[in-house]
Image (cartoon, rainbow, N blue to C red):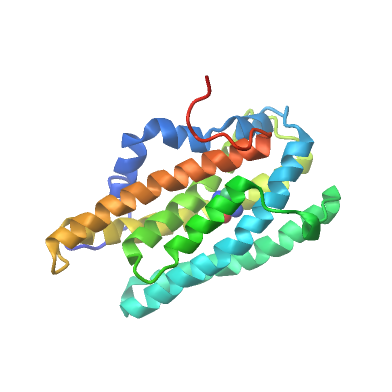
Amino acid sequence: MDGKSKPGVPYGGMTDTWAKKHRLIYIGATRHPFILSIRDGTVDLSAFKRWLGQDYIFVRAFVPFVASVLIRAYKKGDESSGDMEVILSGLGSLNDEIAWFKQEASKWGVDLSQVAPEKPTQHYCRFLEELMRPEVDYTVATAAFWAIETVYQESFAHCLEEGSKTPPELQEACQRWGNDGFGHYCSSLRNIADRQLEKAASGSEPLVKVSEDVVSKAEVTFLRVLEYEVDFWNMSCGTAGHSAAPKP
Ligand SMILES: Cc1ncc(CO)c(N)n1
């Protein structure tokens, strides 16, 4: 293996293996009842507003996380990988996203300055801070980054598919993460993560043991992202305080 991503070969990387291996929780995060309620038009608008306020808080915390990934990409010094350009474009869309949240909040009468983070938001933001620590490997950080963006992409794209009954006033929100450009950006993030994981798994790093450790840490991190996403959706539905575990 040369440790490079394979252009034109969309499947077969480690991230794809994980999504299949952990299919139930993956579906739990990307086809959550909150998303399904948007898709079938039965969504409770107070739930949408709660999601909006909490996600604004999350996105503000997500910016420094993405910036920390950018710093690590720079420090790797591999200019030809194109990683920095992808991550930088992500920071650019987060800039637009923050402006969109403010505009959307005023449209719905949500005063963002009055929104306090709920427990799942606090926990997710704390997790992002842990991932910003310098000892966290670039491979682990890029796997988390890919997973965080992809859950939203897959969830909201589902609300725009043929046959969905997403209310018109929520379609713009779904477009934000469900559009093809965002899908392409998520594929670029997946390529970055897969290339890193492949390098680690093939033992091209000097210490094979350390590399294996990185791959399993990245997989655990992927699972934690899915759990935080499920908790976040649960909170939006009004079932805050419950974990990702199935309810009795
Ligand atoms: C909770 C959450 N996960 C992922 C994204 C994608 O940016 C977001 N905005 N919020």
